[in-house]
Length: 98
Image (spheres, rainbow, N blue to C red):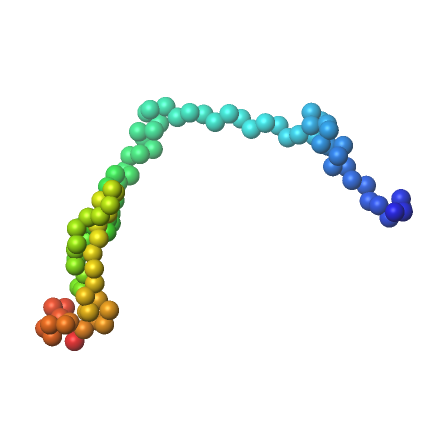
């Protein structure tokens, strides 16, 4: 290597002199008081605006088969209308579509 082709690298010097080059430490985070926590939560809805999947109405073509597993997840199965969009009974749709 040629000494003339190398560029100066101040990084090692800065690494070994943090007292001179390190930024000032951030100020400590202030822990909010109970009054501040309560004030920040005012006007915030506590309930979800959407229903969980197991609380929603039944979809056409889906059948509930109860809960499964230790977590008691809801389960179900599909019939032919869930795959094709055609009612296997042949009855017209209640929403006016054909």
